[in-house]
Image (cartoon, rainbow, N blue to C red; front, side):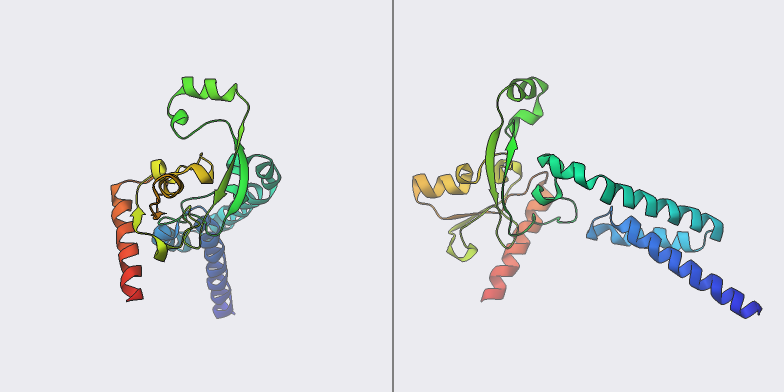
Length: 207
């Protein structure tokens, strides 16, 4: 009877830890899942009563954030999950195969200054088009057809500028230069190196 009781506790701990791991991982990127794993190990060895309370609260929290708030997200383009072009779970590239339009009040630079924000928000919003390819970058040109790959942050990706006016399109339309836009917003030089390695490996794989 005692063996069955211990087995029950073990299975319950495993189940609660699994629920904990899944719930917490929703808020972390793939690159940080190892952190979630170690936290889950600590959770596994905590008291069973604490596990039940934490797991129950996490389920309620996830339900609230993912389901209750969803209708509100649909009404606001900036937080609409179907109109987000990048988030932490896509470290190297953005969301793939997007094609949608949204209304915005400002450009990329106006977000840096409150005075610019006030100026732009008084005006009528502008409608922009966002298109991404199979790699999640803002292109309609195939990578194999490009002579240059543009790597950088939001200045290259230009999230708040309509598709036809971003740099790679301007280079093509005005100078007949075929370029591939590999820009990604909110990145730094370490990300640039990772992107270079990513395209280098793709180029080597084609040979």
